[in-house]
Length: 145
Image (cartoon, rainbow, N blue to C red):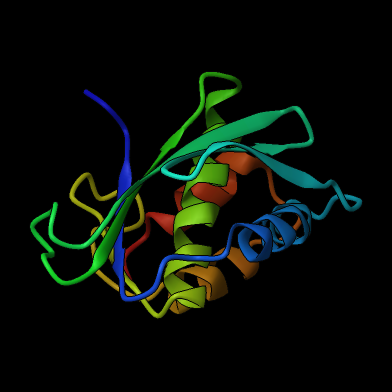
């Protein structure tokens, strides 16, 4: 079974905006010094890397080609390295896209607590657990409100 988080939104996110937000968000969540994030890939498939320790992939599907017919859709999944960190990175990327693009998270596997949402409440929940391990923050994200 593949681990992925879906998001549907009106306007496709700007790659540079998401890239600039991922590094500080991950670093702040883990209470660590600033670690940069960078992106590789094609327009429809981005790979987000955070400090060489975690990666996540984002696949974009344009409107009309998904069940959310009039909206963009993205699927975010963790990379193969360090599962806890890559899973946290995938969750953070999905949340940031939802917040920046005023989108809704589709959380069928209940990776983020199973409740659809914009991501704002999920970020608040995650930041309440600062200076914890990636595993502890992932667990906190899964606790229902």
